[in-house]
Amino acid sequence: MIEIVGKPSPCVRKVTGFFTFDRAFVNPRGDIGVPVGAGYEVIGLNHIGKSSFVYGLAGILAPPKGIVLCDFEGFDPDHLIRILEAVKFSGKLNILDEVDDEEQLSELITTLKLDEYSVGILDSIGAISPIGEQAGDLGEANMGRRAFILAQFIRKALHLLRFSDQPKTIVMINHWYPKIGSRGYDSPGGEAKKYLASVRLLLKRKEEFPDGSYVLEGKVVKNRWGYKDRLFYIFMLAGKGMHRGLTAMYDGIMLGKVERKKNIKIGSNVIGYLKNIIEKAQEGDEQFFEPFYEILKDTNIELPIAISDEI
Image (tube, rainbow, N blue to C red; front, side):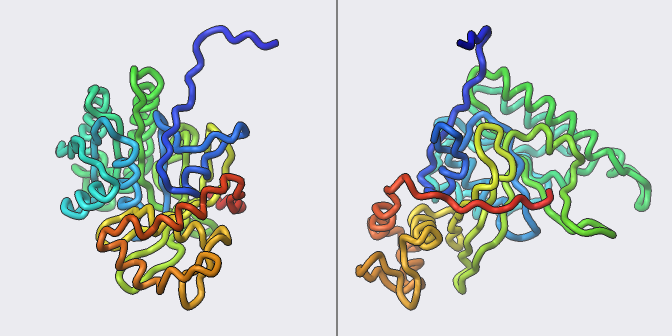
């Protein structure tokens, strides 16, 4: 018999309602749901929708508390609001505006310590510009400064996550780019982020549609509280971000529960053309998607598993 001395920190999970996404974090006991109170790194190529995905995820995980956003790349505030509204977020959003990036990173930690906030976003690691780089001349060597600053930030952040009285989550967005002079891909920010992020997600665009909607395929490449290499799918509705109904439809297609040919079908029941189904989502007809939720109630469905990418 094992006697545990001390108080281990349990893994707090939140079920998002996105079928494959919730199950991509499963552990040997069968617990599902997204880990809360963790450090995330979300990685992907340029312009695939990483920020839109992370903003939507933050809107799901944060309630009843608020979100702190540390943005280094710039964003459309109206689009951000639409993404948060689409996942029913109605709390406080604090957008930091410190001049120096080091100060903004420190302010993210300081603000997230407040009781009214539970999720912090860093967008993105690759855009961090140290003071020495800002003040120096073009061509001046500044290698390693970003990684050094980020390593300090992550250590402070993890201390906050470990010792906070309530679960706090930090999501770092990062780019994925081909290695210069060799094969494979890498991401900026040094090695510390790989060791200290509890969860790492790799995103790719699976499919795009004429109206601007698209599907993200994600892979859990690191999961401190469960299995890795599980795949998930998120349907991003044009102008609104994560959509549960369309995602349930796509999950059903990928898991073989929904037929996709000229029409979308569940068994002998014809649901309609994909274009018309997307229009139903834009109209806000949530009841229309109930058949897709029903078909996914079989919790014994096994998720697809992929070989890890080199990241």
